[in-house]
Amino acid sequence: MADEQGAVLTPYPDGPLLLRGNFTLRTPDGEVIDPGRGTVALCRCGKSAIKPFCDGTHKSIGFRAGTSRDVPAPRAHDRNDDSPAAQRSST
Image (cartoon, rainbow, N blue to C red; front, side):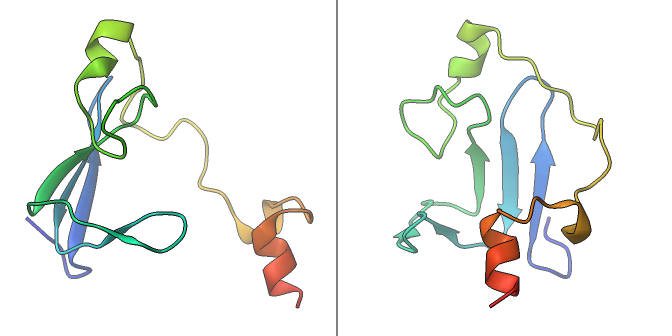
């Protein structure tokens, strides 16, 4: 069920991020990753053998993560001036 933006990302307790809707996945180099479907589970534990997709490894390694935000959302003015984003905005 997609919203006006085209996609919905839902964190599951102690599990993956579920991405539904109209989206494009890309590698850090910009290459498109074919998800093969309109809903995918993205790895959040970092141990999946099929990254960026979840393979269920989080269950066997005891991965723990909540679904609510424990800290406020980051703000542009809170970034370290050495961050790539800060450097890009200053050029």
